Length: 71
Picture 1 (cartoon, rainbow, N blue to C red):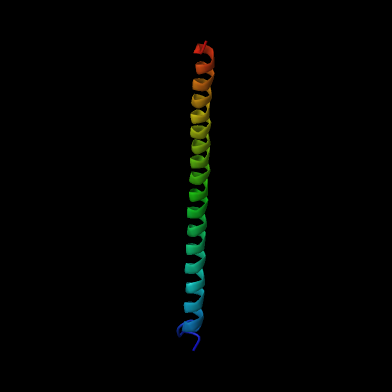
Picture 2 (picture 1 turned 180 degrees about the vertical axis):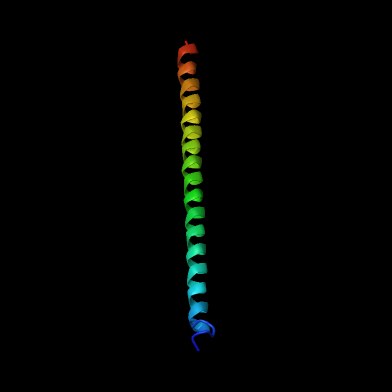
């Protein structure tokens, strides 16, 4: 029997390890996607605050200008 086929793991064990590996790969991919989404949200938040401060600055500048022009 020494010349025969090599011993192998049972099929359910291989199937389980394959599922675990697939789950691990999917989980890592999901984490990468979530990290990218989080970075995009942070950039969007910065842009939003820049817009809010810009609008507030324009409103304050117009109010200040109206005080300068008024007699």
